[in-house]
Length: 203
Image (cartoon, rainbow, N blue to C red; front, side, top):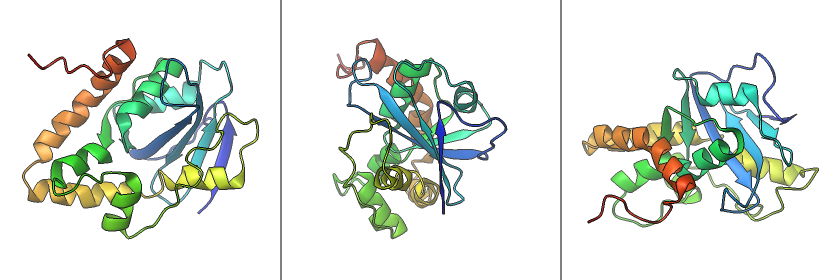
């Protein structure tokens, strides 16, 4: 396993395959206020490719091309936030997508623990550290510990998706899950446009 750190964008010609796990690190949880700092990706081969986003940066052509590629499935855990953060930063809306948090909530109704650490421990047998979660991602130079933490959020999403898909099929909720995934980019846009909390489907 190796971490590959790039500045501003993915390198030309890099192909991460038909399903790419993606996660973002930001300065906070408000995309309008807190800038996007790092995007980490994995094709499921054990390597992580990380793009450090510079302050004020508004373009990342290679990354955006992959995000919008209809033939590449983007895997997220709580994709609602990551999709919104990247859309706000670059204007590219990721699709098609899969979200392991949504899948978990549809099939693990016996618990309220749907965090990535819990899911990986229970379904994949991997224990990841969350020690660097609240570190300064806007630093000019990121530490090896930060990069390893960021990588751990994407390296196992392919295996987690497989485990969750087996449960979705078993419970007869695969079609419902797919409908939720299809709507997720729109849900992210609603967040950006001013409806982050309001349920517009309620009476």
